[in-house]
Length: 151
Image (cartoon, rainbow, N blue to C red; front, side, top):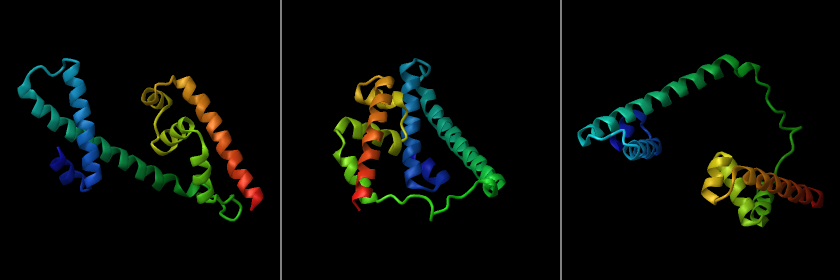
């Protein structure tokens, strides 16, 4: 799987992602009883690698096409008007948050996980994740704004 990913994706990180995705898919299929014949597992894995790579390429082509078509219509932010964030202050404020709020914010915005996924990993309901995220963002915003006024 890794060799297939390296050959067709030409990126070690993308190949590692491919291996993880295909292994997860294969385990799910085995657990659900959809792959009963051990001789078919190898062909299933190869087919899953092929289909995943093709799907990634289609997604990239669509993205490039959309950018080519609509890039001129998208307004650019005026850097002189947009507020500048002090990254050190943001990190400091993020570290001051309680661990649960910090975890929810990092998983949501850095890992781009859905509320359901965050909740499953932290043992919370999706609704609870929404509340924690809302409160965490509010605390983070107030902390950063307080730092701007002090500067």
